[in-house]
Image 1 (spheres, rainbow, N blue to C red):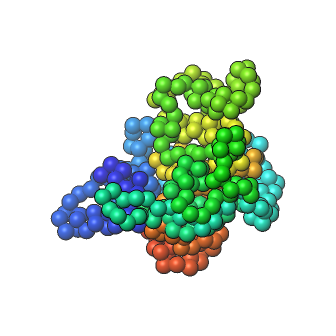
Image 2 (cartoon, one colour):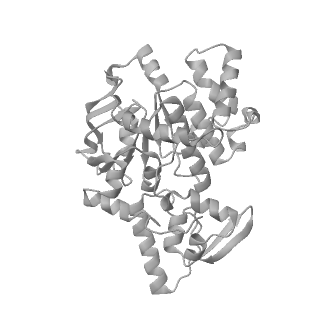
Length: 377
């Protein structure tokens, strides 16, 4: 079973894995499970083999390996696994970060949460016409929330809950059937021409599949430079300087500028997608499953990068994900959606520590490895 559940939400994943477990018990089937999710491995496997650069570096009973990792690579994997973590990432860069900066960030978080909204979603509804059927399908049903400046709001829910549809309406890639999306106090439904172009400059997306987001015929330089050219920013020389700054910002070597997407790893491509989104100095970035396809180490690097950029630039994030373990690391507030409806909205700590709805409790209970206690130094 090679990453059979990596693209699935936690509740569907749990059903499939429970069924697989039932088959192993009843039929005596042996399962070789390939996964980058350590929490899942800890919860579901009796034995774990850790591979690094083509070699087995550690092997043994699951809990023994994860609670007492011996190899440095295993220790890094366990430390980076979101399903095994229980706290928010602190936005301090390894280069030049210090304890004072951590304290300042902690103080700033409270003040940011009381700030004014940059995006407001008000009674949003989206209906789609179903093929060969008379009735309409309501993908989003009366959803309201706001994103405060400099904070991260995550929308979570099962596949088909409507979270990506909400994201596409916030990006003005879909028009709502009813309700409004406002950016900085202005209703985006009337944006056209220059006003729409200005909105695109300030609200940028990072999608799930970075390879699909980047034109395979464009060099990395051209991919990052394209938004600057479209918006008429700078001349050739100043744009080249800006591209170099952006590549440095996402911590990649300048040499990648002349390469093409197929020559980069998934994590490198996602960094390029972030650099491209940052090119226009946006206020808001909509991340739609932006880290769900990445292994835990690269995922951890990208999440820390997003967190550092938020601290430095005052960015606001709308984070769409089915991975609640990631939510705990990155979000200030959480919106839980089910069947197109908003079922819970609270701070991340409130949702994780005191969930009000049974559906939210079910989502939290389904996080693999979430209850494991790991003995990390």
